[in-house]
Amino acid sequence: MKKEQFDQYIPDDERPGAESMRETLQQKREQDKSIDSRKKQDLDLER
Image (cartoon, helix red, strand yellow):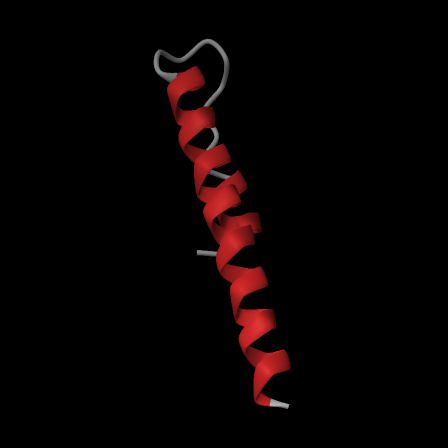
């Protein structure tokens, strides 16, 4: 899922579970970043 799509799922502060949702999103972004950097490394190795 793209980051832009994911941003739409961030709930309003008034909603219950907003904080945990944000934390989940944050973790997802961190995972995506590490996956992206791994992919880039793989591409560099293939060259």
